[in-house]
Image (cartoon, rainbow, N blue to C red):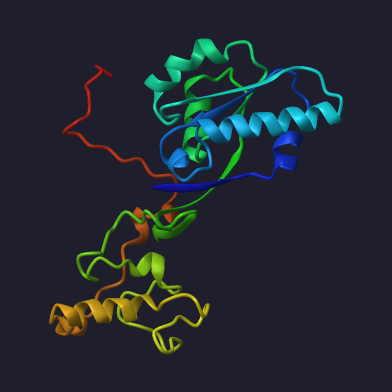
Amino acid sequence: MIIAERKPLEEIAAMAAPYKNIFVLGCDTCVGVCMAGGRKEAEETAALLRIHRKKEKLEGEVVSSSMERQCEYEFIDEVLEKIEGYDLIVSLACGVGVQTMVEHVANLRVVPGLNTTSMGYPTEQGVWSERCLGCGDCVLHLTMGICPITRCAKTLLNGPCGGSAEGLCEVGEDIPCAWQLIHDRLSSFSRLKDLNEIQPPKDWSTSHHGGPRTTVREDVRIDRGE
């Protein structure tokens, strides 16, 4: 899932200060699951913003609601009537959701209420660990399902560096060495010989370093006669 966290209230309040009527709009999928931008968080953000604006003697109203997903046009269309007439939308979606809202309804003034941090999974209640960078050239089949691009500080494709010790990365004492994890998993499947195969340089053209990416699935694409 996409992981995000709410921006400091002071930052949200500063963005909202020039506007009178404000709508805090939550997103109930990824950022709802990680307890950053769902209906509950939208209500809390709106309440805190109302208190802050009252202290600053700013006029207007602050309301909140949430929607299924802000990253799809059809769901945005369902809330257009609800948010009509408001001067500012504080979006509690990930960065993709904010930009989708802006691209689909150009006259909306939308600002982000969250900082999008990573793609990961929950390791425990309230803790998410990054597991994917979306590089576009997955190598998990070579590394027994453990991503060296995300989990190795040096994104090495051919075994560990010389900086790990006792299974831990030199970057931090609480960070497991990704290649130690890969080694142990290969060993458990009696496949350590796989480490002898040298992997060629990675094709980074599919990663973000080549600029904004567009993914096209021709098998599911709808021909709109364009």
